[in-house]
Image (tube, rainbow, N blue to C red; front, side, top):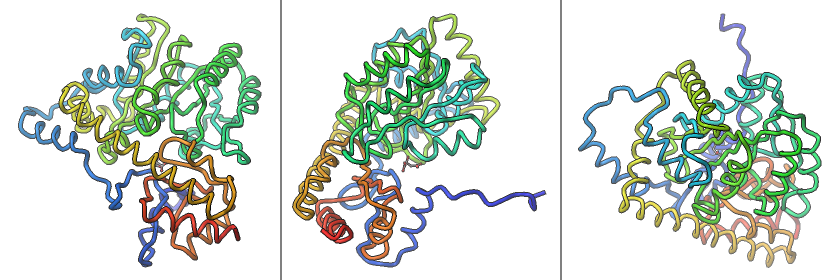
Length: 395
Ligand code: LMR
């Protein structure tokens, strides 16, 4: 039977990871996959995670199954982290999932079960795997305008126009913060306008929040998600712990589904449990248990927040340094948006040929659409990147 299989299109982010690893050049710079790296280029296990793991080894008495939804304490802790007190707890159904990607997939699944005619509205551009999963699921999707290449900001009028043309019941996928791949984000006032248009059209929000704490801080980064969850009867939220807890390979995420009331939440919860059961039975627990321990233990939490804050402010400093270097090297303000963007990524607006010559001539790896991972830089490599960009631009 396998003779009928066909090669699948390569995931461009993962293909770039392999190409970087295979490159023998000294001084190569990896600005590809969205993994945090410190100034030494390492992705360390966060201190609080190490402490939680040690405690787990000592104290955990069983590895028997959790519930289908995962540990309820994880759902409570993540609900508080992401939603704060924006919605009543009894309106929120939730399942632990293998990473944020698992939550995204389950979110699409439950949306289709609830509305077989749903079309998913995704930002242009969005994380490529959003579109890839939707294609695989044969779930119709359409893009709404989002990124303005000319300014490096949000094409807000285009976005509102496209959302106003969506059909009632469509699911609008929004990034909670730190838009991937562009780095350009909506302001709080803009999100209110988006809500008004969506409400007028009868659209349903789904938020992918994978970088809480990487932009403007834990609460500020949750503001868009909280506003959306408050404004609508129904809202799906896919949250990832991969980045802000640094537990990438532990596959730790959660799907939350805000329902109109407690009764509806009961049925939604059963549906989510069912979806987990059909897909992988019980979700992974190790990462989720460590995250729960950190969020509920004041000392561990304080240490985690402090380390996360170092990560966040470190990336902001690199952004400012890069914007300054580029201003000087290119003698223009073309790249000033780099300092205004938030999160791990910025889309620089270079052509595919320019991206390719950065790779071929300078051993600098970025995604083909010119997305860079700011955390792949350090104080010493920022000038190297800026000089190389100026060179490929002929500036
Ligand atoms: C990214 O966008 O680079 C990350 O979210 C990692 C991934 O899985 O693509």
